[in-house]
Length: 616
Image (tube, rainbow, N blue to C red; front, side, top):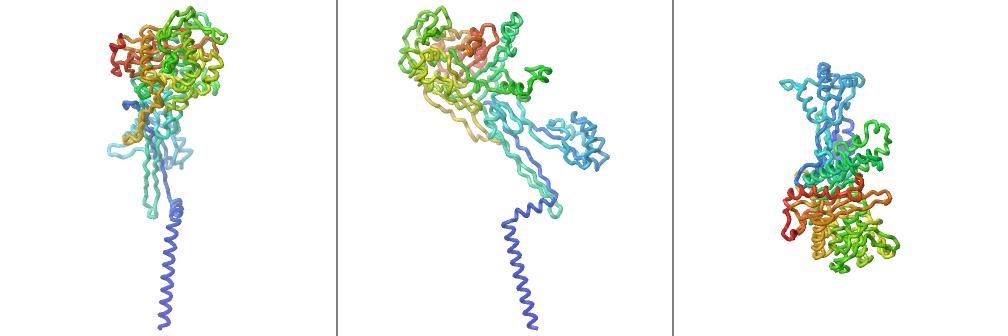
């Protein structure tokens, strides 16, 4: 008996030890490989996973007006298996699908039910607007809430939309498949993008549905420095001027056919920058011709339907790339006489010009064995520095360059930031590093220095020259230009701000005061009179630069101005590249555009009129 009991004790002990070992082993497996086996189990069960898309962040103007946003759209999904299992609802489902979603035909739905009877994910329509989805859901319900349809569900997505169409198109850019293509959409793509969420569902061992939802993280909102009202004013002024130039271009072509333009848009390009000279903020940035942000690949404005059928795809892509370019940032050109204030400033700031010099203009200078003409071939006669700017005299500026010399000129080109990128927060900024003469090249060939002094034979970008010009009139501070003020999250909390950055000091306050006064005279009495606005003290400078090759007679005409003279609050820079008019070199459209803009934005910005000091 005792022997039997001992055997039972031993057996019980062995079984207990085995249970302890087994439990220990299970705990070890759970700790080291639990996730692995959980996935294997889940893979053998009915399992469902659905992506919950994030919403791309908005782009808004400085006052919160939405410039780019996302709206709900839906893919219409048909579950053939479910609908075929409920034949009493087939006719009503098919009828309502066609009624609410016109692109979905009854024949197409019935063909899917017949040819793909077990299909559970058939996309009938993509990106249907909410009002169509809402209509279907409303019409498919009876008064007591019962559904009259079956097998139809909706997959939510977001579609990028631009409420103002083509407004600030090249600045904003557009997004495709959750990625920015150009402009702010690509520059701030990481900020605007979010993270998709996901809904997980599966049947557990008890056949209960287990559901886990990971919510999406939406993108952040980019708050720009742009003012949508100023942007509208700028683009309307550009459109009006180009309509006028286009009419003249068509008339010229009909009269003698002496010049055939590549298009009848009025100019090859027209661009405008409006900036706050005291912090580097861009208030408006426009390029013409433009495009519709909601349909960026549409070329119907530039080709007839017949032409689109025959134009090679490469040519169409080249045209689109041209339209999508932001001229203010991506194009380089010779600035012409808008550079003359910079030459005067470097001379005054270093003392190589005293300020009381006079120059005799006889219509040109012979430099390095070549004759370089003034804009007035008959000559302006005797002029001081202010008069040279007022008359935009090339001869006087060339004579100033002799005093300034290559050392000072080359050094100040760097001080102003020419040849360097501004690092504005936009993609595609062009480099002009290889488009300036070096100090040795200026010294070796006197004509290089002479022509550079009045803005020819070197290249700039609009944003480069505008930023440097702001420093001429604000007392000498060169600010880094920017188009984004801050970034806020989905809850409206500020997560990043764009600080005002002073990159360097270009000239002294005393020199800046002289320049402002001289450029007021340019608009009040000189070549810039067509940009003057009654009641306001505006300063500025006109520019006309002959393009390469010089023999073709094409020009870039421009005007850069500021107001008010005593305390500048706004700068307007207008560039018209190749105006389609008979005499490009005397085209005043850039000044007219500036006048149009100034006359509207000065009252809008509550900038006061002419000061007593400016009037004197």
